[in-house]
Length: 155
Image (cartoon, rainbow, N blue to C red; front, side, top):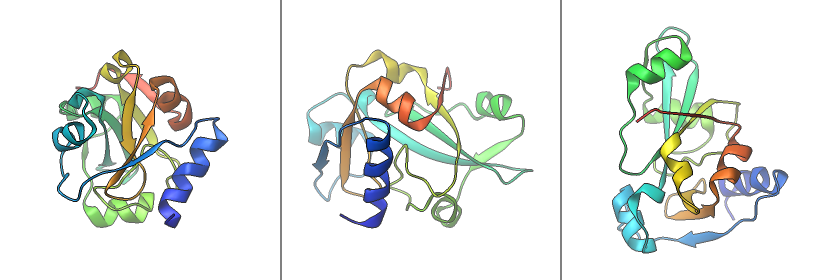
């Protein structure tokens, strides 16, 4: 298991969450593709999106439901400053993961984390494992507990 995925597994284990990983086909690039490959609905896919505070340069993680777009004005109000999507180099430097494989937990540093409230409507979710091409199954309560995120209306 790559070091990145091991960090995710260890973080989940520390919160009592079992590691259920599924490998995906190489052709999966979007939440809809991932849902199709898993045989589930796209709203069950957790997108881990990294933003940065424009003035503080602080990383902010949003765990959003697959088809939902993050309302950056709502996010800015939550963090108290204008935010923008982080570039791939920033994401890797601050989280330890590459874009496309960013998981909800196991980052190099503690990130302010916000969870799209619509994710809680499902009994089962699928999130990144720290490496592209694999996802892990989580319950919404496990996502909230392990990430330490705040559930908010962010879409």
